[in-house]
Amino acid sequence: MTTAVDFTGPAVQEAERWTAHNYHPLPVVIAEAEGAWVTDVDGRRYLDCLAGYSALNFGHRHPALIAAAHEQLDRVTLTSRAFLHDQFGPFCHELAQLCGKDMVLPMNTGAEAVETAIKVARKWGYRVKGVPGGQATIVVADGNFHGRTTTIISFSTDPDARADFGPYTPGFRIVPYGDLAALAAAVDDTTVAVLLEPIQGEAGVLVPPAGYLPGVRELCTARNVLFVADEIQSGLGRTGATFACDDEHVIPDMYVLGKALGGGIVPVSAVAASSAVLGVLRPGEHGSTFGGNPLACAVARAVIALLNTGEPQARAQDVGAHLHARLGALLGHGLTAVRGRGLWAGIDIDPALMTGRQASERLMRKGILAKDTHGSTLRLAPPLVVTKPEIDTAVDALTEILHP
Ligand SMILES: Cc1ncc(COP(=O)(O)O)c(C=O)c1O
Image (tube, rainbow, N blue to C red):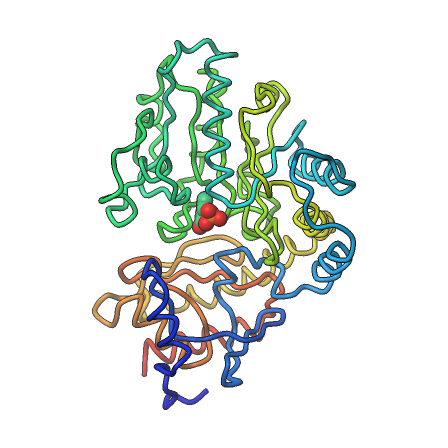
């Protein structure tokens, strides 16, 4: 990959001119992709080390997922939930079984699934737990990222996500992530749920201290509070297990899923829980026109079938161990911290060397696509189909930009 490439061409300029600037993309214009690799409009190839923020866990255009999509495109794509379709029951059944839960509620985007979890927890609180009307509280962690809707940003601690978008939805208490005592102190009789990422992705792939998630589980059980695990980014193979909660032998009351559930093809999200929890909903109380549509269900069923083989999880463990071993060797040599699990790493670059943004731009010029989260932190989350030699290519490029 040459460094003399012009990344300010007309395709970049057109996007800049005609879109709202709610993102700050790297100036690479992708035209094709396969597996762990993408190709830009000028034919340059890049190793994808972001994987659509984990939406592409199975790689770009996985043959089994593309086949499922094609087959479904040729039959029926949308019915709305006004009618049933032949992919709906099997999808809900298979996802519930993957999660070890009684039932699921499908939506489209991650934020919608989080909104679903919040609504279900509140209704469960009023109708089952007996919280007085309008009083329900949900405890969340600082540094969280659960999406971009007005309710969700109401409990964000990121000023960019929140500042100019009030007034905010009440009913949330924010406690330090990883601090069990603070969490216990925030729970009272109005608390219906604790909503957490088992590993905080956007915050920089922060892994909580050992014992934290089991402690949250115990606390929630003791206080009759729902433990809602947002596994939208951490789940479906990324950490080397089906769910990041599995790594801690913790079973939450509700899983919130998205991203990789749609196989990188269509947006598919869902919550999964017991019938005592999801059973509180009645017709008309929640829904989405595209939620659980035939195309989404067909692709997601193929995703679930892949996960049921255990192969993506095993690859994440094996190749992930190689990634972390290689990154660990850079500690003190340009990196000040390496965190994560499986094929997921948050790395802090010595701020004296460069920002995370500069690092991702320099990596791009070397044919590696990764993205900063904030400051000097970079997230690496390649598709789980990546190989060890490809990981070596990425880490070699990182080493070169740290020590030019
Ligand atoms: C943990 C977590 N929850 C929720 C979301 C929101 O998902 P979406 O962007 O599909 O709304 C994200 C997206 O990055 C996420 O990482």
